[in-house]
Amino acid sequence: MGAADAGQTVTYSPETLAKAGFPTIDYDILDVGLDFRSDDCVVRPEDVATYAFAVEDDDPWFFAPGPFGNPIAHPTFLANQALMMRHNHYVVPAGLHARMVSAFVSPIRLGMRARTLGKLAEKYVRRDKPYMVTDYETAAETGECLVTGRFVQMLFKGDTAPASGSSRRPEPEAPAFDPEITRAEGRGGRLELGQALPSLKRTLTQRQIDMYSGVRPHSIHTDEDWARAKGLRTTIAQGMMSTAYVSTLMTTAVGEGFVVGGRMDARFLRPVFRGDTLTVTGTVAGFSREHDRVRVHVTAAAHNQEGAQTLAATASALCK
Figure 1 (tube, rainbow, N blue to C red):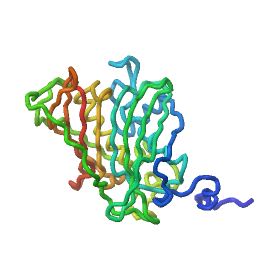
Figure 2 (cartoon, one colour):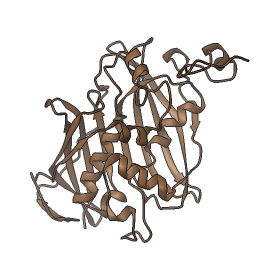
Figure 3 (cartoon, helix red, strand yellow):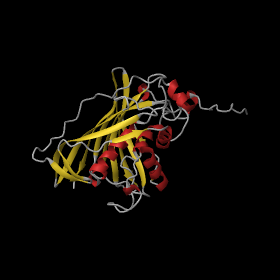
Figure 4 (cartoon, rainbow, N blue to C red):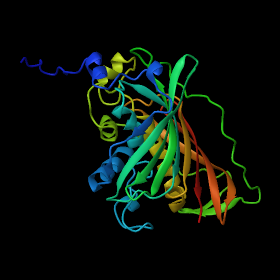
């Protein structure tokens, strides 16, 4: 047996992987209706702390008893579990996140065991870019639903990244605001129509990206040579890191009603590169009535240090 040269990565051939049941993901082989299932995930203290470091959110609810009893994890903590379901069926060399829709149903509690089930709901080509759409539900081993959602992934055609840009499919109906409701109470005080929420600023280091995505070769997030080979100037952050920032914005402003009852629809407009500084903003767009609660609706955005918008999102939460 020969030894690889120092620094050389030994890997499988596509043919070997295909014979073993792991074909390289490609638009033509995507089977709409295919069921996905994640590995189980135990919500461990070290993983919650790592996630908090990666997205720069040290909310005390993650580290000490709070309104849900024992500590909880960030609402978007299990998003990667949903994304990685595909890897149990395909080799996924690279892809760009286009859209993520989430509904947060129950708190993700420290120590619980969670699993995500999903289905390949749709595939389509728009502007010569291939997309896959996955619906998913994450639940605790008790059956308690934690998060439901949908993500849209742009597949690479060939060896390099397609031009960035979000998928533009038919839009859902805009929420019906109640014009008689102009304010509500949030975690940090009163929320009023047109109010700008306290903004966030995040400079993404490679260490944070590594901790969020997990270090592995042949990844556009953690392997700079691989990212360059795919046509990118350097490594990029997962789009879902930006959804964590919006979640922080909402949890800070509204509180418990985002952890349980929160919703988010995020579109990823262009890649976020290592070293970029994002400014994340949100504005109260309106209020609606939901049973005996008031739901606040927020429009959110992220811009990089050059002023280019990287994310457009809507989010909502139940107020006190």
